[in-house]
Image (cartoon, rainbow, N blue to C red; front, side, top):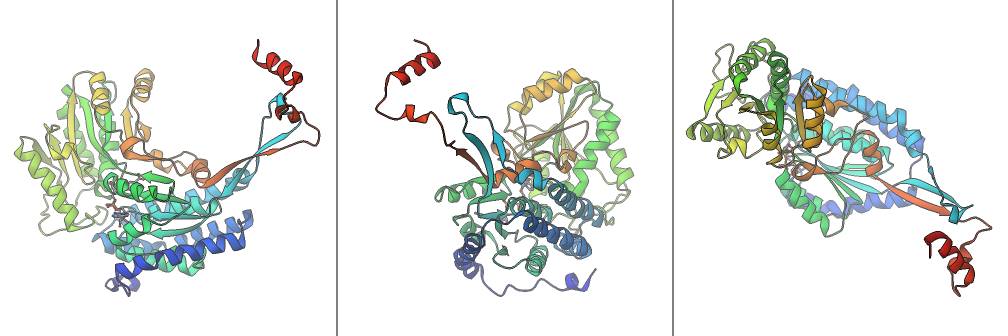
Length: 485
Ligand code: NAD
């Protein structure tokens, strides 16, 4: 572990109240710079993006150490994949496409307005506010920042208080690459978050829980700040009767145990044909044992971020057991988890909607398995619950896949796998209903943080005098021609 991280978390030099009071001044500085310097051109934006890319690459070990220290143990490999690789790959994709995205778009002009010209311009909005969660604390701060800066905006970021070392590192790294009138990071807890979400940004991207998302949107409403809400929810994995259980099990348990299930798009529960529950349980256990021969002592099995979250998960398990569910532990080496920040993974059989494990987003290594009789029943179960952030459908039958896509609505879908749709740079990402609103990633991220400005260029010689009074016979004739008698 590097020296920078081995050190204890530094006590903050300012209280949350002091940070909260300073926020309007910080925003004013960013806004003033945006007005004074004007929208950055392509070269400037590419420089900004390259700085973020470089910062991620040259500090990847420090980032892995900081996140691991914050979690109590976070797999270095998971950090390299999900924080560094995903972000850098996205930056490279944005850099490749930026010129094309920034171009003004020619649009069609109706013959009645001919020979005028129409164009849509993509203009930076100004200053974007970004609130980030703890579960992928670098990537979920950086990806919105990349969107914001590619669209020519300045940004103010509030990372999570649950990963204080990573948040401090984020602040240090960004301030080493950007002046405080380009990017500002503020750290602190809910008090800072609340004050932050009341600021009159030009757009806000909030990534976090559905419950806090409601507060954020309420606060933003006072200033009519448009919000992209990247929220959570219960993402189902549906195994169709035709699909090999063995393969589905591998992909589901891999997605579930990555970051110990603390992923917004982790498969939350599985719907499986009723005759295949035992086979699925055996397969999930076998694949988990192959991927993680040990768990408690395995550096690639990540800890639960905070004792509060571990206690929350244990409460779900107790509640389920008390109400009649059977808990199946996954513990190939028979290790003790006593006093460990990690949680022993558990499969939950016989879960019902009366159990809290089926009411709340699980966000941990706990996997309820729900049997269904007919495929339509599985889709009905999904549709009877809030719209999920992700849906995983396992089938080699195209008609079955198309039916699932048509008859359910979710933020995104991976067919025959879990989670990988998130890492597709050229695709939008975002929830629907309770799992969020708006999109980022892909071209959609650039567009969401740009003003799409339609501009009409009138021609020197044109016929629009007809549309101004005094209205005459020529207009009546034109209207008869256009609209009929
Ligand atoms: P959270 O909602 O508790 O906190 C997120 C951020 O909001 C933190 O920075 C926090 O300090 C801040 N905050 C807290 N109270 C606030 C308030 N009243 N006003 C403004 N800001 C406030 O979420 P979390 O526990 O950090 O993250 C886990 C949740 O995030 C899960 O529900 C998960 O599904 C979701 N998530 C979604 C995505 C996505 O892309 N859709 C990605 C990761 C996590």
